[in-house]
Length: 180
Image (cartoon, rainbow, N blue to C red; front, side):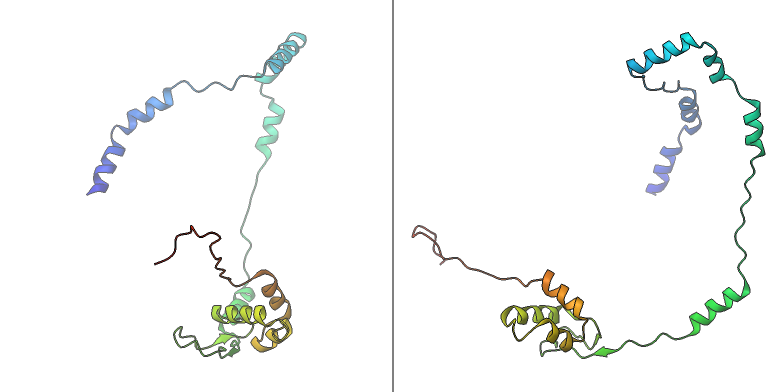
């Protein structure tokens, strides 16, 4: 119902409104900078034929423009290309290798398997925390071997990601409000 009302308002008196917009005086070009305007006036005074050249249409250039013809066609696809794509679509993809997730805390998340070369969020937090607490035992090489990851990925993970650390500062003066 609302669409009919809006369409009726939008289409009301369309022809008259369009005619009014078309018949309006077109906007004039932006004013030229005074230095440019003075240069143009000087050149017009020196060479008055420039004004005629600007308004004159050159027949030779127009004939060149009329001779230009652009013809474009889509490339013809061969039957062999189509048969190759059909064969590629029919071949099954190789199955990914999976591994079981590490740790005992995965019962709530329902993660059954993780693709090799990837880790879950919980595993990422666990390995980051282990590396933070015991950097000499949980080295990048051991983490890469344990979680079946590439060495450069583990190095980037340890370099650019850290776990949150909560610090509680004791109040400095006795006037601090004590929790109840």
